[in-house]
Image: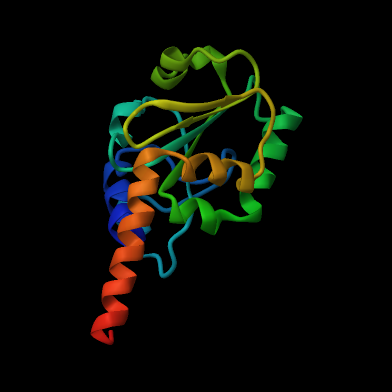
Length: 169
């Protein structure tokens, strides 16, 4: 599958990010350390000074906005994502959290959320989904699987698997 190369590109593009991992956690892997991990993990990062352009053609940002990390909807959304991270990894999703409106991150300035919301951006940079309530991974992945670029990725993967089966590999 394409997971490893894409995850590697994401990790390299996030090397300058202050921290990877859920908000409030202690020491977390950075840059090359992410590449060295045995199994791919869902990348969760804070918005900070990142821009959406950094993910263009590399990943599908899922931005989770809240006015506080203690917002029950934010906590519920993070729990829902933790239930099936593999499905998100397979679809090249990077979770970006922004729980401090006073910091006015570039992503917050671009998307102008009000209170809690989730926003799904495609690899092409377009906004595909905005929701004011938490969504489970199944609902999110269904939305991703309807995106034109994701449809192309799935078709190419099926063709590659068929070619491997024919060649006996």
